[in-house]
Image (cartoon, rainbow, N blue to C red; front, side, top):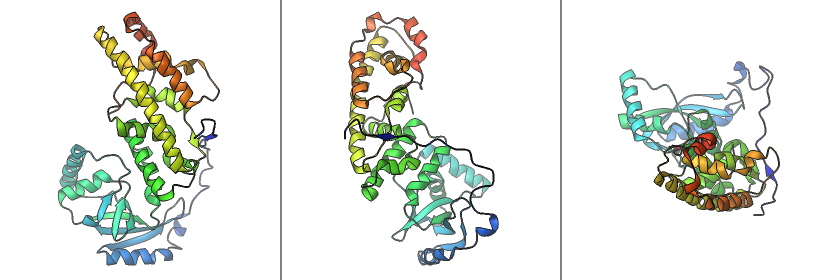
Length: 322
């Protein structure tokens, strides 16, 4: 993929007039006849239909249902389940004796795939629950769209990046010929896909240190997502090569007796010449290549403690994004 290809960035959020969008309450119950086929399938699958409505923003049909819990599984796109969190949540649910937060599902071949609520689902299964309440949507593609709503939750950079690259690969298989720019609302930011490809290969990668650089360089591609994935993989490999060199310098600084959680941030900031350039477009491969070359020239013997303090870690988070 040519580096000079046009890159589109996510549109800025515009302020809307209060009460100007969506459906009034009285209209949320009308026009739901198209859900009858889905309701029939839910009953045939052993579930029970509780109700139906149209969502207040987009007017999409939604069925509220009680589903057999053994027929509900999480999608592979969301963040990994924390067993510690599942156990804590299960204990809290048993203590309160109530489940009030439905998961979201789409029906696929008699099974139900949930793009959110991985920990709630795991906790209910750990408890031994027979069923779980779900908001069932008729369009399987919502499994991708709904995952974008997870941005409101407290995901760290690693979790979000892995979610995006897993979703990215799923979309390549399902809609690979569509442009990457068609999915900007789902991916939120282009650097998540690149960092996700990095984390797949190096789980202990410290994306926070490189984020100021990569965010500046990244954009969404106008090419088909199946082709754009190859570029994401290529960029990930380049970032890993740079990371190898940064780690070498960090280890040399530690051997010298310098200690700071921001050593990697310092090294990256030291070669990040973009800090002094307020505008302009920069080629990803060329820019990272220059910073890689500059990193190789750093002489740890000449770095003093005050140098790191003056740099202030160079911004971003400390070395771990766990």
